[in-house]
Image (cartoon, rainbow, N blue to C red):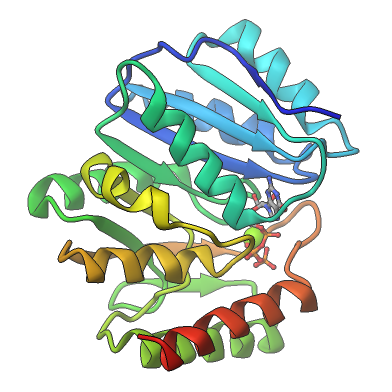
Length: 247
Ligand SMILES: Nc1nc2c(ncn2[C@@H]2O[C@H](COP(=O)(O)OP(=O)(O)OP(=O)(O)O)[C@@H](O)[C@H]2O)c(=O)[nH]1
Ligand SMILES: [Mg+2]
């Protein structure tokens, strides 16, 4: 059981894309192809937690086709938050670190076609974070059952309350970060799971980086299973409540 970085960490692209994966064998191949077809100057970093469905093997096959893919294999399922933070650390420690880092789910809920819009919002405003927002004007969610919508709305309500922000969507994982902000904040990111989305916004606010939203269309996964469990929800609630008590 060990951590392994597979691929060339000297790629030197302007944009790094982090794809956290656990059991995404049915989604990862098309997602990588569609990101590659955008023809942006990107490096793709997949953080896989030794998915039993062999997601990592599919990524390694893609590495034979594309030279800009990195794969970081962790020994066991260790949470979305730590996967994203490990991704930030790997990109930031590379010799030619990307200027911008995009995070997105690997279940095809986030459409790669929205990446250019996230980037142009970042270039326009040069802020710390641009959030791909499902709840601002122009954003939407397709295919979620009522209960999932309620969970998301409550999670957003708690987050907005604890952060005291006017953002519409604090919990979306489809984002573009500036490397300048991440360099300042990464040492303070400790989230294990989904609360990473709140912790990063909180760090931006504390450090006076602007956070902006741009609308996205979120489509419920068609293949594979959600990893959002009660343990993740508890961890999220504990974090946000602590943020209210110790702002
Ligand atoms: N490496 C890693 N990736 C994870 C982990 N948990 C979730 N992910 C990935 O994080 C992304 C988001 O997880 P999902 O299961 O789609 O959760 P969600 O999008 O918040 O919720 P749903 O709308 O129910 O799909 C997906 O790409 C997952 O494969 C984890 O523990 N480790
Ligand atoms: Mg999902």
